[in-house]
Image 1 (cartoon, helix red, strand yellow):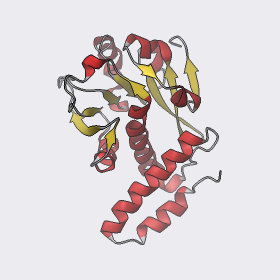
Image 2 (cartoon, one colour; image 1 turned 90 degrees about the horizontal axis):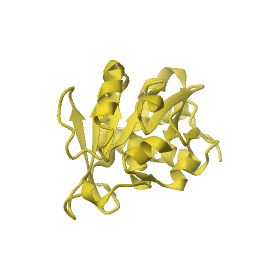
Image 3 (tube, one colour; image 1 turned 60 degrees about the vertical axis):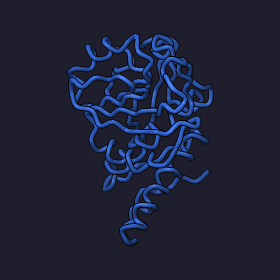
Image 4 (tube, one colour; image 1 turned 90 degrees about the vertical axis):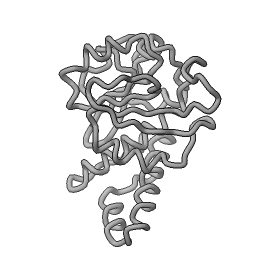
Length: 208
């Protein structure tokens, strides 16, 4: 499968009116994610001049898609209409990309909501939590605090899996990839789909 060029995406988007621009960005994020999840060798090569915006967009798309490959315990959703909530802490740019991406979408017939969290806010009702790089100094105590919670914890900090993160984003040759700790997932009482494991850069059965 051919890779989608980041420069080609940026060129097309800059020539569209604002409303079309929004939908084009959403389409690009979806296409990039489908490529990444259907072919483990076809990761987006991020161009230097647009690397950050595309990185944020792809991470947002991954966060949404991760949720469809995770099984939570029944107690995580008290009511049939309880939405699946993605919390974002210390990653404002990713949160900004995530909100329009999930609007009107569902995961396993549940509405998806996004909570833009500040340090110290309670994490009640969160099902997926992205902890961004700015929170790296607080990462270890925060992960220890959440160890018994049924939350899919996603990070973007080197060595985060060894501290208890379930999924950690990495950049390899300017490509967004992710690694998984099955031990951490088990501690959070989460079951991860084999389809998700198949496209991870690395899967650790125990914390590295």
